[in-house]
Length: 383
Image (cartoon, rainbow, N blue to C red):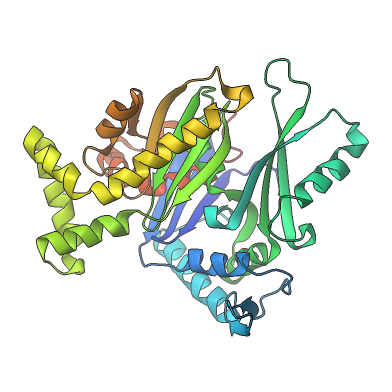
């Protein structure tokens, strides 16, 4: 990672729902919006990362990955091929050109599915021995040999009188790093840093708030749950449900083609919120029970598991912040708030960014989709 502070930074979020870019310029120590863009075509990044994450001992290159089937017959599966690199680079280059991006350096998100995440407890050790002992402990946890992973860590503040050191670990397969590096080389952009989505979301939506909170990122294919404590994303979990499932239910219940769902959804959801009819609200929530219930259960499970740990028993969550493409799903914030008796709202990732007043309504509308890209672009801009 290069830690030099740039005058302009490009945040790039490559997700299943497309590629989002945000360029911020630093003016008088304030991040100012210069431009942004979205390439809404679906991307198979999660499938690619999942295929690579399941393999062990493969060559760390852009070559064909070997995936073992249940009968242990080696099957060649094309994963990070040069063709895939060119495909992603072409889309990235196109959205940057359309958005008139000028920044030469980019900070890029790693999807949750690509990152191994854990908190390790270490006894007090000498500084010279720290990394050796840490790697020895991490080796026991990683799904693949440590030699095949790129490792990043952060020492967390001590909890009370605890003498042990808590270390937050993020690790990613080297093939993934190579893949992203190649994409940006092809697109003619310098890759300044790779960050987990959780880090970018925490920066954009939580900031200096030290309380216990949860960010719920409702994406196209997955909903991700991050517990933030002391301004750091401590845990993350994921369920395979999101905006796509909402569209499927709408398409089936309304008996319309999937191509029309987006337009109908925007009109219907907006009208529903304006009417404030309790009967219609109850009917709506019941229709989408298969989407809402897994999200609520995961929030409950994640908080319960975290707060049962000895260091966290006296802590209390203060809020749930919604983000992602489906964050404005009607009544979801109210339902969660009532269920857990805490604040729940759609986060504003533009809150730390200066922009023209005339853009306020539009930026508010697309904000949840851009949260990761905004958080990435804020790197090195906030004091």
